[in-house]
Length: 318
View: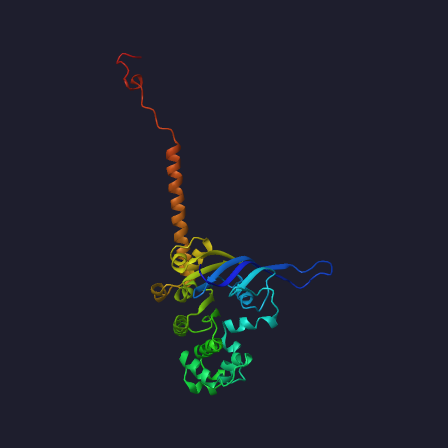
């Protein structure tokens, strides 16, 4: 039986808006609507969807930073959805997060060595400088970087520092929430390759969230497509990318930019419109062909004419 690292069952998360009337309560926002999936130990699981579909809310619940309205979340076989913060110490050592904006997630008043060592200090470890240098080397930074501040680094380097901090307590699960969306295109590939190498070398379980299906394809082997708080399609990344079954998945694939078309000056929006139009035209043509075939099959076959109908009339007939 496959060892399950994360198990999510029928998770619902509702938020109530502020009251705007003295007699009526605020309306309810359904952020998650019965989400269920399993992540096997060592698996690279991607979650993809547009902004506002519930991806980040789901990650917060998995990380124990929020509680579901209903449903169950287990990490390493332990139910965490109803545990208070004081009993989640084991989860902080086992699961770590990499956030979207590295500058927003790094304290600008702390030096890099203190930022990376912060999870170790929280868990009572001492003499952390050797571990800090080891992690800096693992993410491709020089040991001298430990004495500098976050604002002295580029965006890609700050994200490497965030990854080093997440790896400090030696977690088994790494959760990345849009880790490359704030980076330049030229830097994204470097950070993705770094994550791919670290996950493989350290035998980590990766949960990777993005709105870009092509980015998820680079580092994940399984993907779940989310829309409006629900998982509409899930499966191997190659199957979902090459032959998407759900209309929303097809839209995501169509919106992904192609290199040759981009070099020709066409934007992702234009490419998406062209792809969807072509598919709609193909679908309509297939439907018309099917209707024509059905109509031909349903029409009665003409009966052959009788001899009386085929015999010409006599010449002297009036």
